[in-house]
Structures are given as C-alpha cells and as structure tokens.
Length: 258
Ligand code: PGA
Image (cartoon, rainbow, N blue to C red; front, side):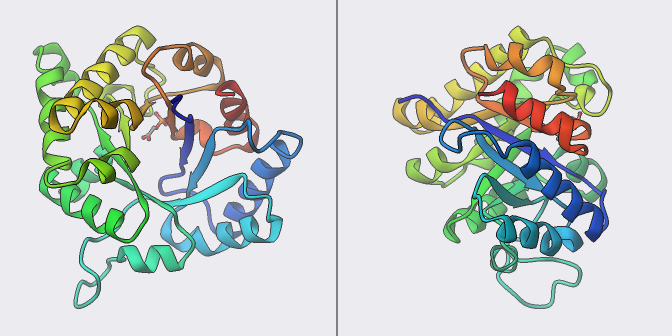
C-alpha cells in the first residue's frame, strides 16, 4: 500500500499567539480549494504558548486539513518536573503529533537517544504519533560515519517498541549541516540514507513495518526543492523549518507533495 505523504512545519521558537493564529489561518486559506483526500497529511508545530491559538484557528475552520504537533514533550505523566509538558497535556491542547529528538534539542538541551526512546513510548501509549528526528553532523559525514550514526540513533529510539507502534511512527532524517543553512542535501543522497533507515527498521521489526513507516527529509526544504525530493522512492515527505513560517511557501511545499 502506498504511504501517505506528510508535510510538517516546525515553527521552532517563532510566532506569538496572534502570529500563530494568522499563520494557521493563512495556511488554511491557501489550501482552501484543495481536495482533502488528495492532500498529504499536513502538520504544523507551534511553540507551546501558541498551541492554543493555532488549535483554536484549526477548530474554528473545521476543515480538518491541518493537524497540530508539539515540538517536544516529557515522558513522565505528571509530577515535580518544573518547566515540562506531558504527552497528556499536549493531547489536551489539541496535539496529535509530537516532534522528538530534533538536533537542536539534542545539541542545546541534552536530549539523548534514551530520552527519545522514553518519549516515543509515552507518545505512542497515549495514541499520538511521534516524529522522531535523526541526522548526522558535518564532521560525522566527512568522517564517513553517517550510516553508522543514524542506524544507532534509530535502533535506540525504537528499542522495545512493538512493530505496530513502529509502523505508526514517523521518522525525519535531517542532516544537521542542512538545517537552516540553505544547503539542501542532494535528493539522491537523502533517498539513499532514508532507504538505509528503512532497512534498519526492517531488521528491527519486519518488512511490513518498514514498508509502512513514513520517513521524511528535513533540512532547507523549499518550494523549489520539494518536487525532486518527493520523486524519490523512499522520501515520504518533509519536515520544514524556515519555509514553514510563511503561509505561501508552506502551502507551495504542501502542493508540491501532491
Ligand atoms: P529548515 O529546518 O527547514 O529551516 O532547514 C528544518 C528543521 O530543523 O526541522
């Protein structure tokens, strides 16, 4: 069965509440005339304080074309964890997806593969979908350890998940050197790494799971790059940062994945 494409916008630490509402409405306006059945799964990930505003805009529209994600979560259910948000809280705020293991969280906030694994389990057991990020640094790429590093990240992130849980998850391959740099990874190379990730999933679970799981590319995705990326055999969509911050460019990426 063909995998449904996913286009997810990672807003990072941008957009106050009004800006989030305006951007959400702008995206829906751009997608208004598109047939919902033909659209990819479209996801936006505002920062915590703008989830309410974005969710309200989505609910008021009621078109169901765009879904909500959080950019992070904590794996415990509740308690003395100052500054953190549980999966249940994010579900309550309207989120259906949660991005975990983004390279910025790994670099600046000490997120480890073990934490990513615990978060993935918490997300899946609450019925939400984890968007699990992985990717190599420029140094790792130049040292020729890209595949080894990514296999290790994926193996640890998926530890003790069931095949059914794995099949529902989404992976985002984001080479760190391509994030926010304008330097997109060559599509064929991105596809090669993504096919390699699919093979790792096959080894951890089975062929059926590896054929079902959606694996996205992220790193300087733009309206001009999406068609070539989507034309690759194993790329199932994109995790978009900078180009998701304006309705026009994000909608062009969504349409480029149709
Ligand atoms: P970018 O960010 O599209 O701005 O490169 C992608 C990401 O960090 O998810």
